[in-house]
Length: 358
Image (cartoon, rainbow, N blue to C red):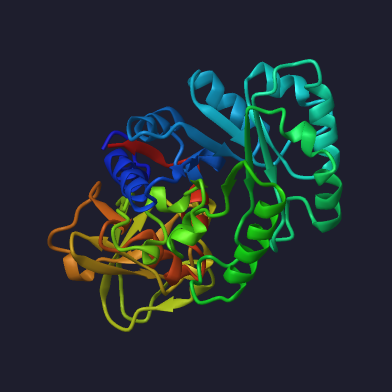
C-alpha cells in the first residue's frame, strides 16, 4: 500500500472478453463501443479503448464534443461519433478533429448539410426518436427530413439509429412498439445502415441487431442478467486506517444511529458518500475481508465508513484491504443493495480513488 486511499481495479482482459463475446453473439452486425463519461466512469481511456481496438472495435460513441476531442488526441484512426449532436458554431471543431455528430433534429441537419455543401461528405448519422422522447427526430421533422433525401444520399456512409427505452426489461411490450416504429423509419429511409440497440437491446434477439449494436454497460461488467457470459470487470477495495473497540451500550457515527449490543471491535475505512457510496448503506451495507462479510455500522460519513471487524479481530490489521464489490459480489448486486442501477455505481465513483488497470 503506497497511500491510504481506496482503489478501483479495472480488468482490461475482461473488457476485451466482453466485447469479443458480444461480437460473436451479434454475428454479422458491427459492434461499436459506448465509451461516454470516460468509459462509464472507469477512466484510463487510452488503456480501455486500446483493449477494445485490440478486440476489433473500430467505432466509438461518446456523449459530448469535449469527449470526442480527448479521444481524437489519443487515437488518430478510429471513428468517433458524438451522440449529443452538433450545436451552432461547433461545425469547425467537428471537422478539425474528424468527429461525426449524431444529427438529432431538422435544424442540426440543415446546418450540418449546409456547412458541408462544398466539402467531402463522408459519414452521416441520423437519430430518430421512436419513444424515448429525449433526443432524435420526431414525426413532424421526419417528414421534413425525407424531403431532403437527395442530400442524405450524397454521403458515403449513412447510419439511421434510435434508442430503446425499456430494453432492460425483456418482457416490456414497449420494446416491440419501438422496434416496429424503427422498421417503418427503415422502410422510409431505405438503403442505408441501421442501429437500434445498446446493451439491453442486444439480448432481446437478432431482430433488434440490424447493422450495428452499441453496447456500453455490458462491456464494463454491468447488467450481467442480460447474459451470464458477461464478465465482471470492476472491483473496489479500501484500506483499514483505524481500529477501535466499541463497548456494549456505546454508539458510533453521526447522530448515533448504531448502538452496540455487546462489546465489539470496529475499523474505519477512508471512503464515504463523497466517493459515491451513499447514505443508503448506513447500517445496511457490508464489505468483505477475504470471504468474511463485515457489516457497516452507523451513518455513512462524507469520507469515512465504520465496519464491524469483531469476527476477524485476530487476523485483521491496519493497512489491510477490504472489498466492497468484486467478482462474487458484482456491481449489479451492489446496485441492488443501494437501490440504484449499475450505471450509477461505476460512474459515481470519485476521482479520489486510485485506478489500477490490470
